Length: 151
Image (tube, rainbow, N blue to C red):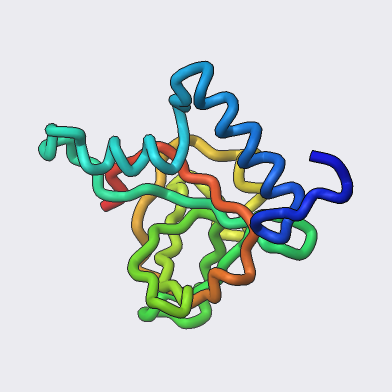
């Protein structure tokens, strides 16, 4: 692990964290109470398809400055009604990492520009029908919230 080590991925931080994760995996079962993997498993119901869950809400963090991404879109019935959100539902992702994301909104949020995603979050999100297209190569981090019913 010294400075002269040739790194498998070309990224020393990635290699070191991978080595730590592998070593920890050998010692204890590596289960998280909340994670993207857990949210996906909850959404799929692990044998319980009648759970009513239909969405894994995600927060994305931009590479530059590592701040939460705030997406904007407009209501088709009132183009002046610009909606902003930190919360998204993934609609589709193509092979070039171009994604269509639907903005999710907390129904208790004020109509003006939303605050930091965790400052006023009530735990309730609903579908807006407003979608944006993003290049996923512009993000360095994703946080998955627990699976919900957003419709």
